[in-house]
Image (cartoon, rainbow over all chains, first blue to last red; front, side):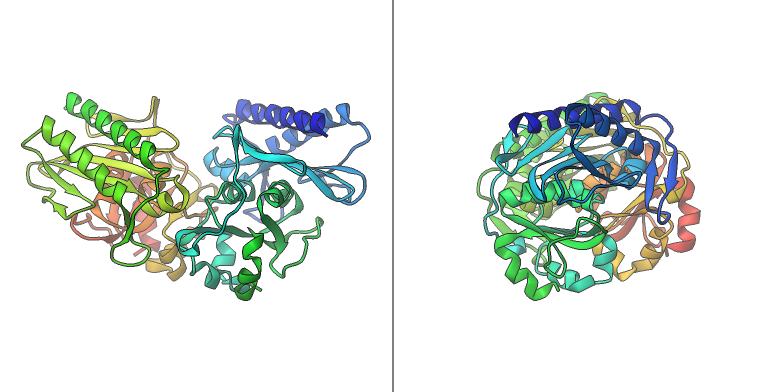
Length: 252
Length: 252
């Protein structure tokens, strides 16, 4: 597993370099489900680059990925979950604050996750049998904090609509932040800069963070408190496990 | 003016090092006007450090600063506007995403502004007779963009309450972001990563960005379209000047 983990770090770094080299070019932007659900030509090329590299090294492995309907079931065999550009809106509008994500599962059990904050050049990596690092800094396990001194990351729409009482919950905290991009937002949770994160996201958006988070005392659940389905877009929460029962009194 | 500008860059870099050296210590946190309006012992020490350094070099100059009621009128003589830690909430909850800001005025006319993003180690500086840089990268003048491909920075409360129609305006854009901290948010405007920023802030929060912004085609006005008063906390907008008349049709 260690060599596979090191290989994944190489793949994601190469994908990061690929995006950085090409991001100043004019992008071809397409709308997917609606006018804020966007994909660029680079998303697709970057995903293909990662798939080809992994297939070459591990020809028996399978993929679940954001673009082009690559949808192997998470519970069957060795599955790489890939998000070539997470935070595509940020990528398009800012050329910043986006991530590449890789998660690796064996028969439904997360083995490691990686999130590369491309422009800040920070690789969050670990989970499973591996400690979690931001580059060379080992991340700390969650320890209880006063919510009044914490910030909470949210999806703007869910905050606005007070979905499942999320806004009521955040009123116990010091404030909310909206960063856009699940990957970047969840790196802020595992590095202790956000207490929790609430959003409406897909498997490739939450897989890597959920594996790293589990190692550090966080859990990724649907708003109803169930395991996510690894199939559809769902409203989820990424919260400290030891605060879960308290949070569920307010969010449900 | 050039030597004063270089001197200001030294002062803000020293203040940044001062904060970084001490930020891992336990902080003494006080509430000011309410439970989210916080100040730490470091805010006050850092302000004093800057004032003493500037007084030594320019004993005749005056100050308008966030802490300790330092309130010289902006229009009278040489005035340094100081914010020792902008984004104190981020500083407390994240030890990240905060800024130190300096603006320098002569008889009410902005000469230069500086915003140091302490943890990313990026110094935004310029305005008046000076071009605006992020460290060594010259920032570009605003050029018209399709709002549908842009993000808007907002204060969460004003967004929630649709103050002055802000939320209606942001619905024309790709989305909103809530970063917390006027300084950090406005650096994202002048570097082209946010189209505009709306918040409820004080003179030391907007002075530096407004001087740099003016050089790059942005204006800092109250929501009503007036010059801010440099005295009180006001609802303001930081927007591209060439889009102002369009924005004012929606925000007022």
